[in-house]
Length: 155
Image (cartoon, rainbow, N blue to C red; front, side):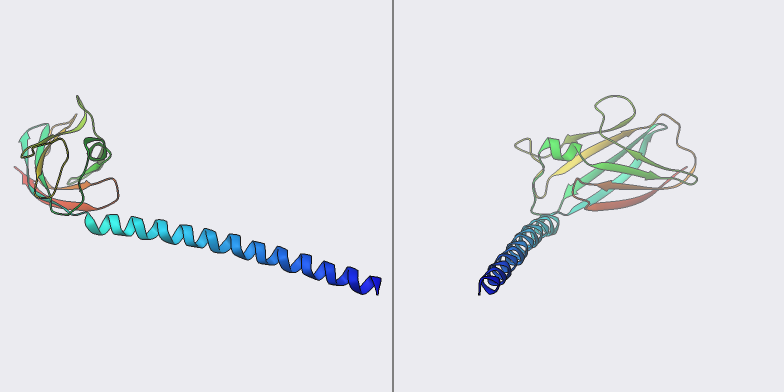
């Protein structure tokens, strides 16, 4: 009888441990799912479109990017964006930089400091080398991975 009681207690303890592990796993899955849903919702609300891009000087590219989604961007979020330049023989990634090598932006038609739906930013990409003749593609990628591409020709 004592051995049966000890065995019964051991089974109950083991069952409660398995149940606890299962509950913790479910909580982690629920957290991951809700985080993924929030991320997906944010991406669905985000849309941008490069309207036009050209080489404004031998070492500078100017592009205009319109916010066509319902998400708004603070200046800090815009600065987290990446700019890729694909050229005839090279590909380069540029980060935000207020001066020198890199890109900067100016909000054109806004009443506040946020980049809202329908508003456009002017992006200036300053290069260290002169642009060679050929076909180029600029890709503007916002902080959450949503991107827009535009192709243009130099020369």
